Every structure is written in C-alpha cells, then in structure tokens.
Length: 160
Image (cartoon, rainbow, N blue to C red):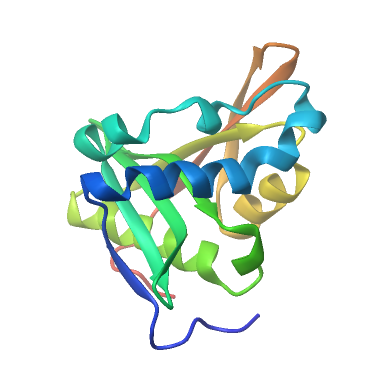
C-alpha cells in the first residue's frame, strides 16, 4: 500500500463539490448493484443536502476529487454515513486515511465512539472494518439482505 503524494488534500466539502461527490459515489458503489440486487443506499443520497446538513470531507489528488467522507455527530458517537474512494484510486491507503480522519473528528467532538453500517454482502468492507478495530453490534434485515452495524471505541488520543 502506498501513501498518497504531497498533492493530496483533505478538506471540507463545499456546495460546488456535490456533483463530483455524486459521480464519485456512483463510481465507487455501482459494482455492488448486481451483488445486492438493488441500488446501494449511498447512490440514492442527495449530496447537495449532505454537504449542507452533515460534515462532508473530500480528498482531492492531482486536482481530482478521489475520496469522500460523510460524518454526522450524534449524542454518543460519530456516525460515518459514507466513505468512498474512486475505484482507480483504491488500494493506495486513501480509505484508511479517511477512516483515521473520522477518528480525529470524533475526538474533536468529544466523542469516544464511531458507528457505521454496511451490507452483509460487502465481505471485503466487513473484513476491512474489522481490521480497523470495528466490532459488529447488530444485523437488521433490509430489502432481502442484512445491514451490518459496527461500532469502534476510540483510544484518546490517537495512537496510530
């Protein structure tokens, strides 16, 4: 796994980023449609609203939006609504960088836990979240598959 180059910038999204975020999410999730037999939930989101209502971060490399992280602070944890990296940029540590940023943001909000969900058929994502220290806390049926809910308790401060 190689680290992104010095031209990689992580910044808060602005309204003008919404179309590029939408394109990125479609590209990142489209291969899941045949796996689950429907459109993945992140592909149905309205990113104009997300940028207004949540903390959305974008990762820009060489002038191209290549990653997105959508966060929602809740009373007892930080919720990761979405994390996605363009397929051509996957395998370079960018997803890990976004996940570590989520941990930093949780701490900045004074929150000691992070939550997220994925689909039971996204085996690689489940394995990745488990490697990152997330634990499965629930499964709920959703349109013929199960949603898998994860939580991670954070150490203060980040030790990685």
